[in-house]
View 1 (cartoon, rainbow, N blue to C red):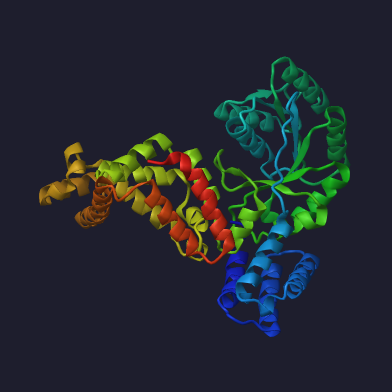
View 2: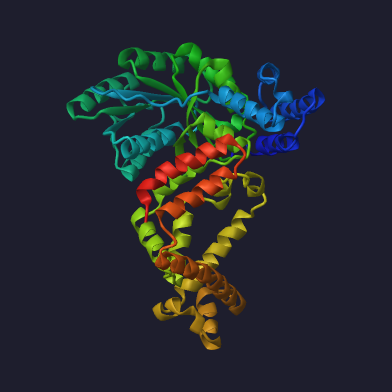
Length: 476
């Protein structure tokens, strides 16, 4: 994630004060010094850093934090709230028209992922917002961009309108909008031309499209890896066009992220979407409060649950959960669990969404973890149906055959069987509780409340409440 190094530095500074029963002014200044260094190293604009720290001091002294019952926690909360303020205090959602066509104009420099982002956003609108989307290929400068958009359109099953590179962008967009009205589309995404750098020819073309179409949203695509250039590019485009939001790509890279933290405060343009990978599904709506949680190591449980609901087979998951509650669990179930987990994305990304696990995500060797998962799946897939149902009956010759078939060793096969036995034992206990009537909706609710009450931080408590609300419709 773009904020990984910043998150690590801030987490250390927060841990140093969070548990303190008393805080002096000197303690607070020491923490703010660390926060200042972390933000500057993350390439946050120095004026923004100064304003950020001044606002923390003002709030801390205004609320008399140093003399409160839990000064450390209060100070962490103030820092958390100021990060939300920096990122944009409210979700910058796309507001669709109830009648007529909602038009989104995508702008940006070449190489920022604008065309791919247009398709990713179209997929979100289609699947999450139930919109009938048309993409207009208005980048007539690059014929490859038209072909790319058409390929992406076929992949996500969204129509693409083009007149080819021979016609002007103005004519393509004009006739594309007529096509959209005549064919019942309620959302249009216009992929405009980019340039290697900002020039008047580019801006004039974009101004003409803006005047003719009057789009509801103008989204600027920027590359998270470019640091403070995000601010410079956003400022230049905002002077020529009424930008309504940013799409930040390559957010999963190792950039310092300072440009993303600075841009809203400097330009007034909020981040609306972030791309966290190359796959067509790797785009998400930007939530400032959730991102602040992740930066401070509080996790993002709500987004993790949303991702699970989108990418996992909920019907299959419910069947598996019902089997587990009845004490039924085989190697086939374990294989399905691994396959479901893989759908959620890289393990390090999942860890960053879990409270307190962000600091360990960077220690995870993703390649080794992926290899281990592949080996485990290969071992299970090399077993016969009977062996998967009764792994405890596997003998030496069977294990050798499975090891050979999976390209692993007998030792790895034994480790998996032992791991399965431990999990099976716990599930048997769960099934026994369920059969005795000790496990019911009330006890599950109580378990969730106990976890929630043990959390000191109010943000984590709120996340757990949201998680409970979402889970109510998935009761067993």
